[in-house]
Amino acid sequence: MRWLTSAEASGERLDRYLAGHFGQPRNQVAQWIREGRVLVDDRPAKASLRLTGQVWVECEPLERTFALEMEPEEGALEVLFEDPHLAVLDKPAGIVVHPGAGRERGTLAHRILFRYPETATVGGPGRPGIVHRLDRDTTGALTVARTQEAYAQLSRAFAERSVEKTYLAVVYGRPSPTSGTIEAPIGRHPQKRKEMTVTERGRPAVTHYRALGEAAGLSLLEIGLETGRTHQIRVHLKHLRHPLVGDPVYGEARWKGVARPLQAPLRSFERPALHAWRLALPHPATGERLGCTADPPADLERLWLDLGGDALTGLLDPRR
Image 1 (spheres, rainbow, N blue to C red):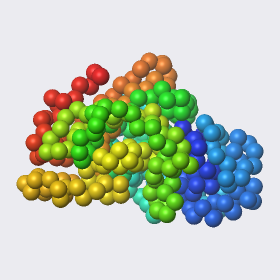
Image 2: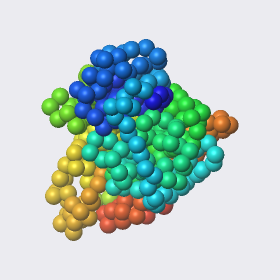
Image 3: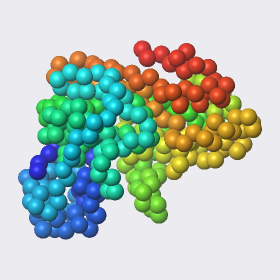
Image 4: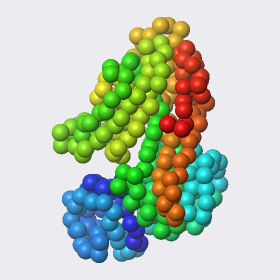
């Protein structure tokens, strides 16, 4: 089993990366590494190795110990664009992108494998064609490579930051200034190991924001990413003291401080109010710029209208 890592894995420890890929405890993965059963760019590596750029990882001996076999599952997929090289999907809320610890079925990857069976041999184990990912409850544009060549080209584009990712977010408060850049390193929380936080020991992270509208003391933000750290937008907005509405991990119950008639839609919004709105990238075969826009989902539109905001279609200009 040999695959090329994606750009998002750059900077991650080898043992943590493999544990996430195989859904196995880190101590089990560390044992495989100690036994010399894992190669990085055709050489044995230590568990503490930090992946840099794109590297080849080989775990052929592990197939006798652990095999992540995926069965295609039929399910709805909203396709924004597709050709023989790639597809751009509009991911719904509430579905995990790929299998991991405790989740072996019912992921977006299983649906991708059903619609695009050729992706079974593209990318890493358990991630058929998946070049980047979105959190379970984040909606919007997601890229899938349909060939190994396209996967390599797209992974390189993400690593070189030639992919433009633009999000929409509903946050508490009004940022001052109303547009700016957040440059704050992000790393694992020292006590809450499942969470990320701003820390001097973290990896560089850069987020741009611009306010598009205001309603009931909340703001609709356009977010642009230069880096792709885990939970980057959610962590940076908390750091800015303007957390996302509905974020169960990095959010706050600020709905208690708004006017009573507006508390219900805020309290009942059950996911982070975050949507991957636009994606622009170089086509892996032609090099031409490909842009895709995922319309805001109905629940985000309804939330903003319930707060007294203008219709999102009037605030958003997809040509920007």
